[in-house]
Length: 102
Image (cartoon, rainbow, N blue to C red; front, side):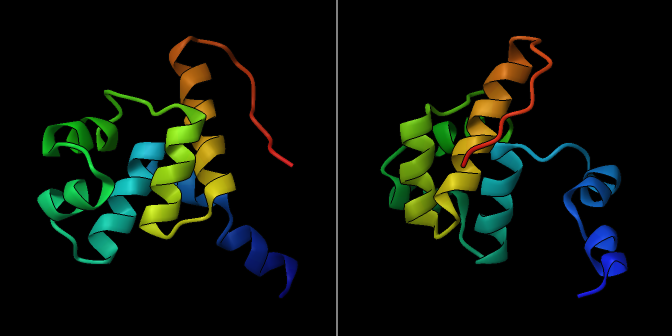
């Protein structure tokens, strides 16, 4: 893969086009890409539809352990989802740090 390809399809360009990547946006994208209804996904996660809606809209941010569990159930990469949840928590507090998980 050339450097051009990495730049063209990287996170920074994605965020320029669609806004900052958040836990909620990723969760909603996974759900809609798999064509799962809000109600069915909530049932799969063991939460209410309103709780799932709150997560997707960023009104609630899961703990790192809950983000990990949600990622495993949804089929996403847990490390990335935990990083997003932590980043959302810092952003909500107004702290200008960037989370990196190794």
